[in-house]
Length: 76
Image (cartoon, rainbow, N blue to C red):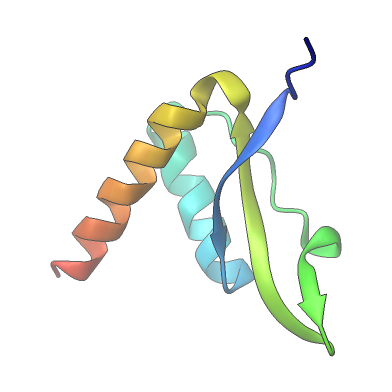
């Protein structure tokens, strides 16, 4: 069975927000890929989403962390 090495944990609307989330993941001990701004989704030259990818074995924990991160941003 094939299991991809990396999976998308979350998407972000801007490169700046994606970089912030990648930095937060790294500070928490995760191993996300560097942001690949060349392969983001686009439509009519408008950025739609930047992918935040982590090793597949970290995916569940990274999603939980990012959900907590979002909740902490909304509570401030």
